[in-house]
Length: 385
Image (cartoon, rainbow, N blue to C red; front, side, top):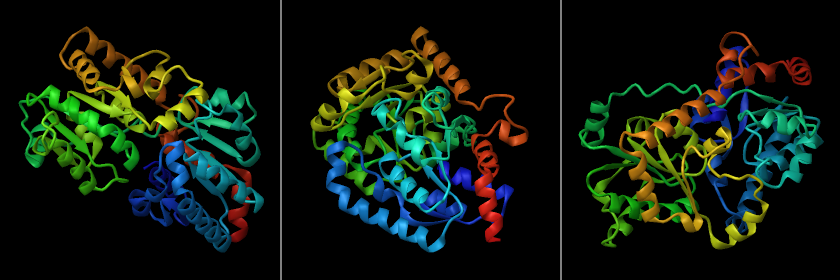
């Protein structure tokens, strides 16, 4: 999604630009030749990654060979540090400037790896306000451009129309379930989320957006499997929907796995409970490396607990239900969360007075403006033309 936004912003400035690399449907629609589909890199967890290394390495080699063939003027890498810093290293070896958009969260863990950015990155475009100082203090040329989700418009579809489209009861409060965007994390998170939904009961409608990296049949199979257990909600009571933002916008609350989805919920002003579980081995190996006091991105941005965090052993159906019931009705708890989410959204906007026109408001436009102003990138493109 971020790559597609950036491609469109760059093309508005220079329609002759061509793009290839790693991406999904949205980048393809924006005009990127995706020589590697991003869904094949969607692996989470230390132990889980090990079993996928041969396949990932093969995709990495395919990308580097394509770069050698096409000789790009600039490499823009987006997130995915375990894969992308190796891409950056190969590009730098070939004299190709590298921009990191959505820089890795080395401030959260493995801070020593910041040296990789100093060594291989020409410019870092960061999307969280505290990241610019963190990276600049460590010798990385970083600029905060705002979060790509901060200016997302609210979905235009009305609640009644949405209800009719997906056969929902508009009189009931809706709860959006977001168990993650990768198969492994969905397997770890969704069963407990469904147990919580069963405990909440048929007073609610439950919506489950299908992430682009997931298969609808896979999600339905997990729901059906859970329905065999009498404790777990039946498949007919969970509605699979194609997009997350309309579901969140029209929902009274959310049960959301840690990650970008928590920012989406904040941008839609939807109170939610953050949940997450990984394998025991991944948790034991990763926990000592974590350098931040909170897991939910909205809490890190706010500097306090805006949304409750239920991680690993605390992530039980009973705990989820208790938190949902606290924030679902009107009252002080819901009001405090909504106020906190509003403040988070304001902090994610691009800094004022640092650009003109669209670039002053839109993170992708601001990123495009900075990228096209890079002197080494401009000289390379002019020379090729």
